[in-house]
Image (cartoon, rainbow, N blue to C red; front, side, top):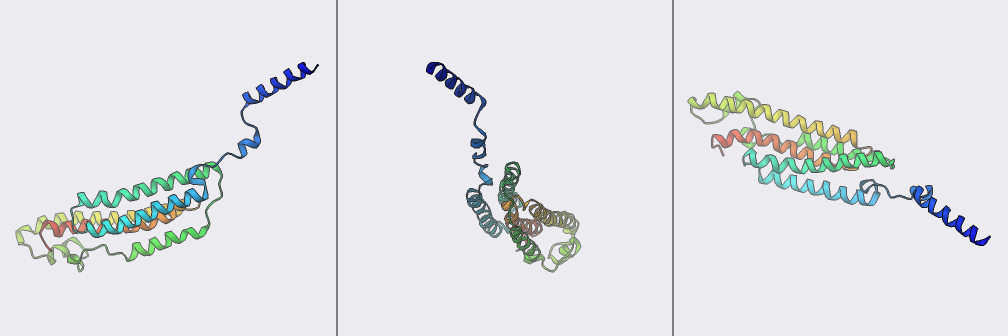
Length: 212
């Protein structure tokens, strides 16, 4: 009798192991990495603060360099930050973790203020608001004026597109902020990158005509 009960018990354990973990074990499964409060907070701090420092230093160092140098320096940190932001949004959404507090939108507000105040025009073109005005303000030969007008028109177009694209990314950060704290605060380095890159496009006019 006892041997028969032992055989039944062993068979029940075997069947249970085949069915997988019990419901209680499944409920104790850890959430994804970026959905855990401590891990997500540390990762967000490193990504956002690191990006902020890189953008500030990069904007200062590349302010007079060619666009081939300033573009990757200013854009790559933002791509990394928003990559983490989207990953966090997906992990929080999939795991059903508690959404972030609304006060994280303070990062978006700070980014919009910074975006509107950060200089986007080099000192040499501070009085110019259009391509003809920019070329007229430069001491260049009249024969070079058509070339200057062409280059300046492109530079002002890229300047405008870049500046407003930064605003668009800031809005995207606001839309993701409920499930991604990283997105809310990554808007700050995004504002710096957008303004610095917009200024870099206009700086190319001064670089080409060797205006210091």
